[in-house]
Structure formats: C-alpha cells, structure tokens
Length: 196
Image 1 (tube, rainbow, N blue to C red):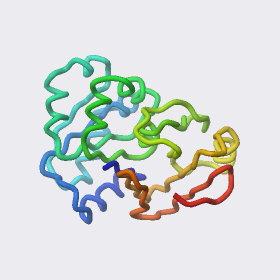
Image 2: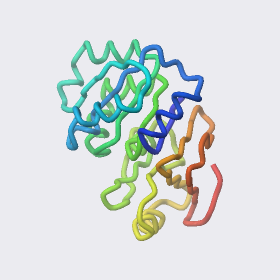
Image 3: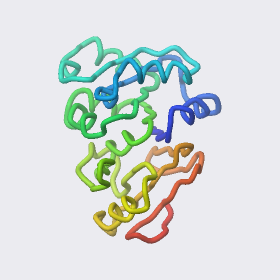
Image 4: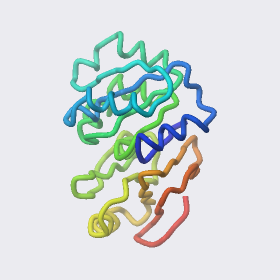
C-alpha cells in the first residue's frame, strides 16, 4: 500500500491513527538532497513518534550500497521525504532502490508522491513528465497557485486524473484510491471536477 501525505505534520497524525506496522520504519531522504538531508531528518524526528533508520540515498552510491538495500528489504514501512522530485526520480526510476520502494508499504511526503505515478508533475512549473509507473491514470501534485494548476490541467492528457493534495491531505492506494483525510484534495479530469 502506498500512502501520500501532504506534510510532515500530517504524517505524524497519520502514524497515530493508522494501522500501519511501524516496527521497522526506514526513511529514504533522496529528495531532500538539495535542501539538506540532515535538516530534513531533524524535521522528521520532531514529528515522527517512532524510531527509524535513515537511508540517505542522496547520490548514486546508494544504488549499489548493500546495507541500504538490505535496510529497505527489512522495512515494515518506508517513508520518502519531500524535496526535489526530479532528483528522486533519477535515483529511483528503473533502479534497485526504486524496486525496493515498489515492494514495501510506503508513505511519501509532499510533492515526492508524484514520482510514483506513470505521470509525474514537475512542481517547478507544473508540467507533466514521466514517473516511476507504480500506478497509472492518476497524477499527484501538491496544491499550488491557480495559474500553475491551470497550466498543469491544460498540459495533462484529458484521460489522466489530476489529484492536488493540500498540506493536511492523506491518500492511500492499494489498487483502489481512497481519500483518508480530505484536507483540501482537489480532483479533476480534463480540467473538470472528477472523482477518484
């Protein structure tokens, strides 16, 4: 099952109320490489109520690091921190690291959730691009300015459902999409209101 949370604070609330197995949480910090992995991990420690192991995964060395891949294999839950979605996609798509992310329950924070779809939304300008392909027909994005949202809807294929998450939104996907916490989720298809 994949869970998509709009923010770290929402992750904390989700952990407190979900039935997820939090016995062996592994945090993947790939997307935080440019904003600072250490700072991102400190922010997570402030809100996540359970111990966790960190796979920094900020550069290509993680792709052959047996200890990191073994930690992911042993995880009961993987948490992917927010940050640069393009950097995350580069290190996750069609790699052993990406394969490990596909095999385990995970929660993705913020815009990095977009990486997991067939269609990924580049938050720098709202344009669709190629993602990891863990699910199809739905593109995830964080709520943004009305201008960028309109641009994304215009560029997105009319058959693709756009789901814009708010900071307090939580979605899950296990073959079926569920809005766990609305938090301002907006769903459109072809630029018109739709449902998942």
